[in-house]
Every structure is written in C-alpha cells, then in structure tokens.
Length: 314
Image 1 (spheres, helix red, strand yellow):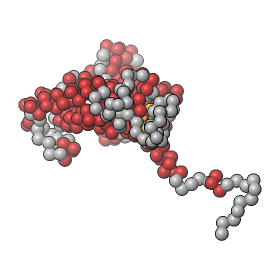
Image 2 (cartoon, one colour):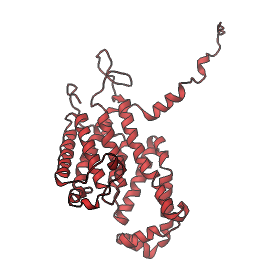
Image 3 (spheres, one colour):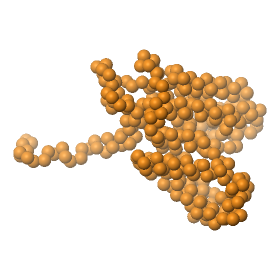
Image 4 (tube, one colour):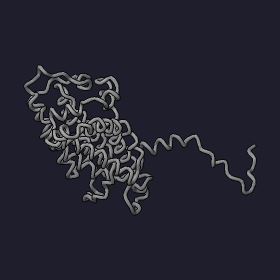
C-alpha cells in the first residue's frame, strides 16, 4: 500500500520521469515553430531553385550528348538511372520551373513541392554524375525534399494549431511541429555540409594540422584569385595560414549553431555568411545554395508574406 504523503511534503513528481529524455529529444528534433516561417522559406527555396537550374546546374542540358562520360553517383546507380538525354533533361527542367512557380504562387504547395523535389533530385543526380560533385547543393536538396511534408494550413492539434472544436486559433503565430521538423532537417543539412568537409581535408592532406599549415589557400589565390587575393599574396602572405585554421574552426564547431538562440544565433549566421562572402571576393567561390539555406535558422515569419485564405487547401 502506498503511504499517504504528509502535509507540506514535496510530491514525488519532482523527480525526473522516464519520459523526460524522449521529450527533450522530441523538442530538439520536432520544435514547434511558426508555420509562416516554412511558407516564407518555400518561396525563397523555389525561387532559388529556378535560378539554379538555369545557371549553376544548367550543365545537365549539355550532358545529353556525353553519355560516354556518365559516371553515376551511388544513388543514381541504386535507381538504375540511364544517361541523361535531351528530352529527359528538358522534361525535368519544365517540371522544376513549373513546380517552383506554382509553389511560389501558393498553388497546392505540397503537390507542387513534391514535383519539384523529385525532378530537382533527378536533375542534381545527373549534374553530379559527370565528374563533378556539387556538395554545396546538399542542404538545398534536403530543403526541397522536406518542405512538401508541411501542410500549408494548420490542422487540429496542440502547439497553437486550430482547435478541434473549430474555434479561432489563439493570437500570435501558428506553431507546428511538422514545420519545426522540416526546418530542423534543413539546419542539420547545412551544418553537415561544413562538418563533414573536414573528412576530405584529412584524406587529401593526412591530417588537419597538415592542411591548416599548408599553402593550399595561397596556391588557390594565385591560381584563381581576384586582384585582392593577389595583393594579399604579394604583401601579406602571413594571413593565409591563420585563415585556413579559422576555416577549420568554423567547420569543426558548426554543430554548435544548432543549439544557439537569439543574438548568438544571428551572430553565428552572419559569421558563416561572412566566410562565404570572403571566399567569393577572394576566390570567386560563391556557395550560394548553402548560403541560402541559412535562412532556415532565421525568423522569416517576420517578412509577413501574403497568406492564402483558410479555404484554400495545400
């Protein structure tokens, strides 16, 4: 028989429950975040994908006549993709552009997003199967895959979504764990792009110390650098080794960004975007697909994009 607690005693519920660890894991992987943030990010991602397939990854169209150079990446081999042909390349291009336009306009975002995800993944598999791997596209590919999993309007449930009894939602942004999961997946992909770039540095140089102390950045500046990079090589060559170690630090510590909030998070985002700006100015390396996906860390709901009416379904 359980004893009756004495008056004024502390309840046993003060001790951590066995479910506390799963609850914390859920809050990390499925945070309730504003649904409007996903709407805004969907517009940014789809707009950029349209630009990307017409510029940075347009090489798929030229690969149609190069079947002899087709070296499919692992996922392309798993899907048994044949070499790309001109009709297939242009079909994928039309599907991507039409799906992105529909998603930006807010027409059936889950359906249009699914079309974009499938077509863009196939497009990028072909782009990466002819001798060059564009690892700067990883977060963008993840973004196209997870954004269609979020409904465009809230459904019944907790966390600020529309109540079951049909009453109006409470004041403030509508929150959604589905939105939080999609944004978290994109954030993890962004961080992984930096963190796992440590691996090739070790493979190519033998160790991070060898890479950090090497002349690789000096060599890159001489080979493909801008006028400013050439000036630095001539007048301040000592800056390159510290810059290499700073890059290693940014890549190694990138997972910390997942746990930052508020001003610390915004400062970290600015730091990484500043890193990409410096590589663009010095070496002409833009990394724009990854840079765009840093938007998943920001309060995009403050942009206040026009909302579709409640009667319109995703």
